[in-house]
Length: 353
Image (cartoon, rainbow, N blue to C red; front, side):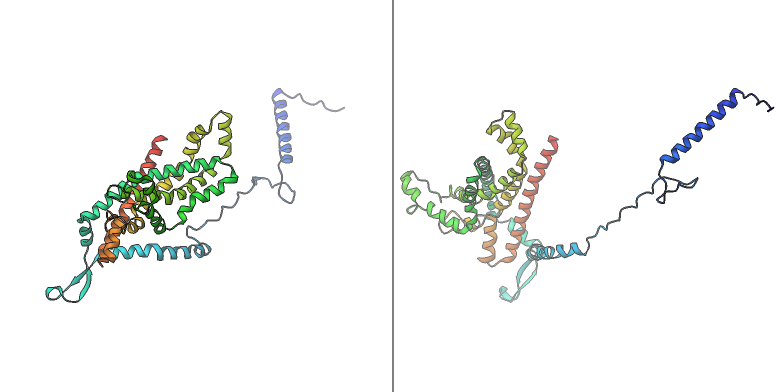
């Protein structure tokens, strides 16, 4: 006879049931978790989590040798063709010719003048008036040219690809003609007696080279030269507009005018800003057209534009140091106008957001 088993209390039964469940759970977890690469289970007490990935290699902030190999030629050319001439012009603007001896007949020497050349340039009324002329020129000519370029770009975007290339080349062709040649061609159209325009109009023909009209005659030449160039920049921006926007507008019932006003023009705004900055700088550098028209129009004086005034001082009056000072002043004004325009545009963009 075997001895009867002692009766288990309810607490002992619950404890045994919990221990069995814990053992079963541990067994199932061990079977589910992958072990090391050799297939054995991890040793008790070790962490079975995968190791952390190694940190990415730190890149140096300095360019490596390959980068300098490509940047070096460009930086050298940029310094030689841009930085050094500007620095040399600033240096020359601080010099002046000094004469010693009785009655100033001694050998001339070059000495340091400080800001004397700048003060002398700003005291010349003709030089100050030349800035007023180019500013008036730019206020009228730049918007007209950009409006014409935008109109041509929008029209080219509507024509078939068969004729688009030919029309683009035709509109761009005047930009390929040098400014001196273009001014001579237009000069024949301006001079009374040999101009077919004045022959057709007869007594009603205006005097294109008079004091009142010569500035706008020059503006007409500049518009004819650079409208096609600015048009190509706008056309390139139009080509980057996704076609899905045009298809969505067409589905919504938008016509060509609505598509142009509400989709195309807003999306080519960066190109318009770029061309406007280029035009501002080009306006301040106005030189070739008035220089060529001087022999045809008495209204074009030697200081008609700031660039022409500096040129006259350097090559007609042999005062390269005063010309250098005027050139530096012109560059500062052009930079101030360009950055001022960009700042105004940036503030408007931020206010819209």
